[in-house]
Image (tube, rainbow, N blue to C red; front, side, top):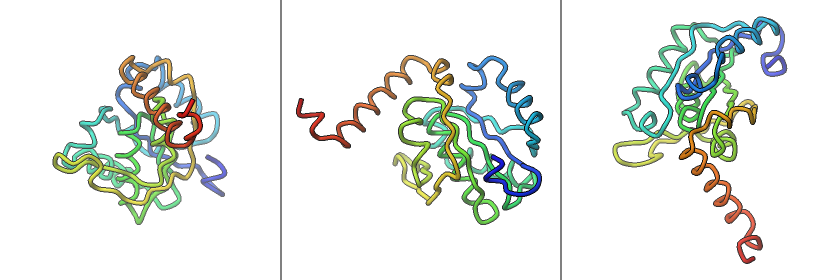
Length: 181
């Protein structure tokens, strides 16, 4: 974060996945201690979004919620947005951050296997349209990606299986020789 923030105070806004907040014991306290130890200033209360595809398909309500929270927090162009969660939350936070103040830098912290393999590194942010998955997309290359595998302990079984399927899909697309075996 220091390398991204440059000189001066490190100021961040935090967007988090409700599933991660609920399933990670003491997450808020741990983040608070880390910020205090490293001189990072949290600009406002974290924005907590429901995880899952419904959040990307809510008629931009979650995007607007994040964008308004960023504006209310007084974010500036040098500030960072930390997005902690599954792919949906990473997409929504990145989409909103791209629209605020000409684009804010986002550090993605994926918490599901699928997000660790794909969404965290995507150079676009995707939001669903009416009955059209990923209908709206904006360029949104992450400023950084931080992966903490301990988050995988919080993932529900169905989400875990989906992430494993994503790993198999990526292997098949990336390595045709692997699939011939």
